[in-house]
Length: 137
Image (cartoon, rainbow, N blue to C red; front, side, top):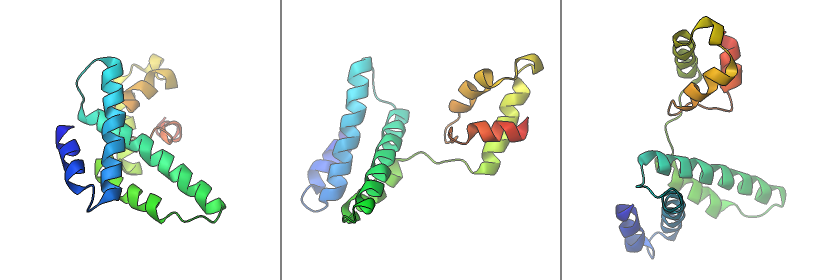
């Protein structure tokens, strides 16, 4: 977090868009770690980046409905990309789901037992999880 703050301070005049993204990311992680009274983790940055991405995409969509300029928001989204977790492909998610389901006793193979294990897999798209589990089972 200190490295990102230092970078933000160094580039705030030369690259204000990246500096703004770094500020928002660091603040989001700082708020979580202060609330939970713990040190930050790489997962905190990934989670904050995903939340920021979703908010930016929503805002861009709203701006486009009103025919407003979205260029700065799209630049922010581009600057945010390196902080986003690598998402698994559909084939990788299917393989991961097969492994998780195989580890669960047959009598307990229900969504409420499968979903938490899938959520723990980095890069697993939870929006597609139900459909993937349906394909595998």
